[in-house]
Image 1 (cartoon, rainbow, N blue to C red):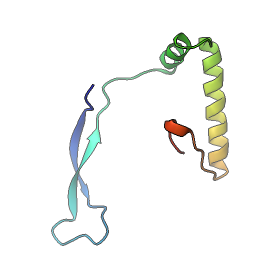
Image 2 (cartoon, helix red, strand yellow; image 1 turned 90 degrees about the horizontal axis):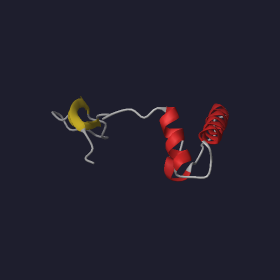
Image 3 (cartoon, rainbow, N blue to C red; image 1 turned 90 degrees about the vertical axis):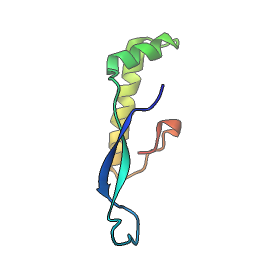
Image 4 (cartoon, rainbow, N blue to C red; image 1 turned 30 degrees about the horizontal axis):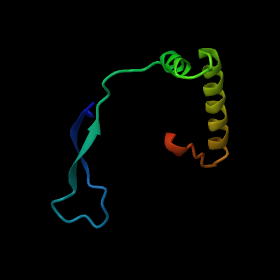
Length: 84
């Protein structure tokens, strides 16, 4: 599936910007739909031995602790999921 995007004219964020190049076009992604929390949990449950309720509890706890560590000023590394 191709990624949807559009171009947006914004301030040039490069260092030492030349005169006349103060603005550049940047690509901005467009959402093609929405996946709800319940849908996500159901899909994970279908492809594992965990129930949808188990998946919800685990994701809720991950978010709870993610917020705790971020509030303490720590970086949280979640592998391929990303770094927060």
